[in-house]
Length: 141
Image (cartoon, rainbow, N blue to C red; front, side):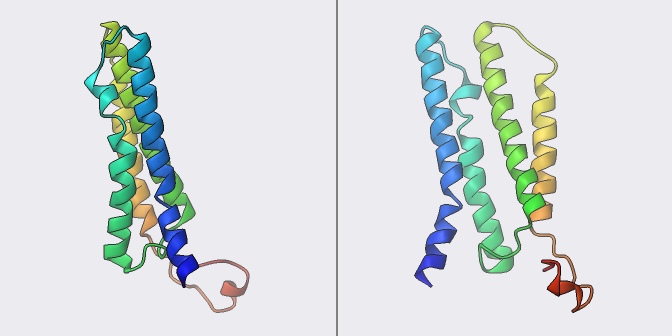
């Protein structure tokens, strides 16, 4: 039982590592950018940090157990949405520091939030068992 508890905590490690990488990238970019900073880059670490804990809390509230209910496609879509939001914040920060503007940056956030929403719905989506015979060959929950 102790091993299962440790595995649940390991699911948060990638989100914490991504947040740490965001903080490092922001500080290195500010160092080489002559101290000029951007709010978008300063707060981009919050996307992986808050979302990692949010998905754990939502899963615990809905399923009662963090490890139940995860579907691989939903998790992949959710994580891809978070990566899109983080990259959008990085790009927005670079553009702000450069003193220019781009109409395409908003699409990072639109697509990112749509992916996060669809991924969240996919994480909790339950497929009904079709027949007992199919369960031998397929992993259908």
